[in-house]
Length: 294
Image 1: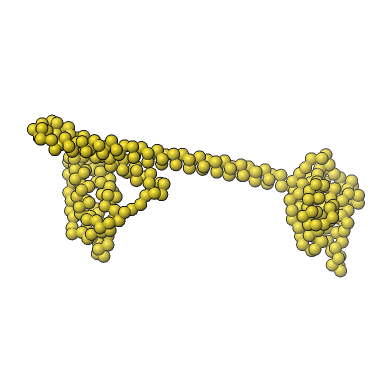
Image 2 (image 1 turned 90 degrees about the vertical axis):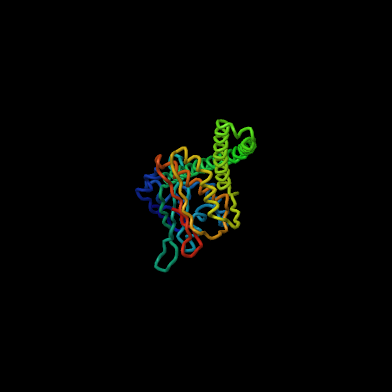
C-alpha cells in the first residue's frame, strides 16, 4: 500500500511496499513520488492515451474523476529490476469531498502471469495437436476413399468374368471347377461388400455421403441379403430362417438397407455356434410406418 498527497508525494509506505520494492519507508516518505516506481515509457504511453500530462497525472487521471482505477503496470525495484503488479488507485477526500490524496494498492502478479503464459503455451500445443490429428484423419479418409475406388474396378472385373465362366457349358460337367468358381464368386462378392462399406465410411466422415430414397420392397431386400450370406452360413453350419410378414413399401435407400441387413446377418452367423440357427423376422408396426427386426 502506497498513499500520496494530491501532488503524488508519498505519505504512507507500508511493509508490503518495502518488501515488494526494496526501499525503506523512511527513504521515500515525503521525498519520492508514486511515479518514481513506474517505468517512464509506460507512464508516457498512458498519458498519450488519456491525453493528459505525463508523470503522476497519467497515473491518477481517472481516480481524480472519482473512479477507482485498476490496471497492470510494471514497478521498478530499488536495484532496477521490474516486477509486474496489478494496481488499484482510489482517491482520498476530505470532509468537503475535495481530493486530498490517493491510495495505490499493488498486488504482485508474477506467478499469475507465469501461469497464464504456461496455459497459453499449453493451448497452443493443443491447437497444434488438434490440427495434426485433423490432417491425419483427412489423410486416412483420403486413403480409404482412394483405395476403395481402386479396389472396386478389379473386383467388379473378377465378378463379371466369374459369371461368364459359370455360364460356360464346358463347366457344367466339371464339379470341381464349378465349386472353385463358386468360392471365387462368393469371396469376390464379400470383398466388394467390404470395399463398399469402406467407401461409405469415408463418405460419411467427409460429409459427402447422401441417401438416395426410392420406393423399396423391404422383403426383397431382406431376401437378397439372406441369399448373399447363405453360402457363408452353410460353411459355418448355421441355418437362416426368414419370417417375413406382408410389409409396406417404404421410401428408402435399398442398397444401403441391404448392406445393413447383410452386416447384421453376417454378425449373427459369425457368433452362432455350428448347428444353430439365425431367425430374421420382419413385420410392420401398428402405425405401419416402421419395421421391427428380431
